[in-house]
Length: 334
Ligand SMILES: NC(=O)c1ccc[n+]([C@@H]2O[C@H](COP(=O)([O-])OP(=O)(O)OC[C@H]3O[C@@H](n4cnc5c(N)ncnc54)[C@H](OP(=O)(O)O)[C@@H]3O)[C@@H](O)[C@H]2O)c1
Image 1 (tube, rainbow, N blue to C red):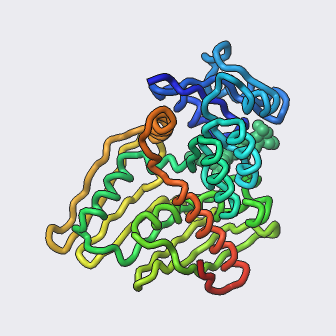
Image 2: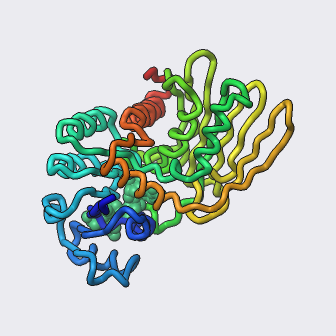
């Protein structure tokens, strides 16, 4: 398989994970990094991959990468509200695009991205790295095996006390992509959505907002129809939690740490009426490398995306409805 040549738009903190992942993937090659801030792309490369100083080009701007003839795929780790505009430019330049979660903060924008990608015959994917960890496949195979029965209820919790250095994540309103909802909410919502065959029918959420209109904490209820439901709790002021649990009539599956740091062993607890409690250890894996390898294979062969564009659309739709529910203080139907 030919190596997929990558460019990165934005000198973001998450590049700490993705820059090494592109280089470590056996199917990808990092060609260039661009930043709108002078010197920031070079600084980013030297910080996260100093040994590649002479192998990766650094640009003060995005156009050189978007129009780069040798680049096949672009990774977009921009602030949530900036994804769409830049992704559209990359798509129209016929680049495949991996867009960090959330793909966009409006479902209309996700729909436009999907349409443009189809029109330009390129692949786009929302960057949920955790779905490439073998732990995720094990949770899904447990649920699909039906040993728990149909999932009637799921719950996810994601929190950590936000550090002052990260206050820029809560200095803008939810409508502008700020707060816990658009930062850690995508994980909490995406995971519980995977447990149900149906898409959400309605949501009701309660949040604590700061002076900028960003949510510091949000708890909510999602109705999946047929009396199936899920709850979630995300917070920048509670102690660290990264938990997920799903329940059927015959048993339950729990992940004490579902959105894993890479290279850490994972644990899955399964408890069924018939077999009792079992704890499984899932070997460590770098989900960022696995995500990049998957996307490389998708763009260079005819295998399909593990995370469909329809999934990204429903993610944005659900998160936006949660935002609307917070503001309206009531149920919002999807
Ligand atoms: N998958 C994951 O594990 C994971 C983890 C964290 C975040 N994310 C997602 O990745 C995206 C980026 O998150 P992040 O926390 O890495 O973002 P970030 O560091 O705030 O960077 C976002 C963008 O802001 C600009 N920027 C960075 N530092 C700046 C500074 N000091 N002053 C002004 N502008 C600056 C950069 O663009 P320029 O270089 O062009 O200025 C950068 O691409 C978000 O969508 C987030 O939801 C994913």
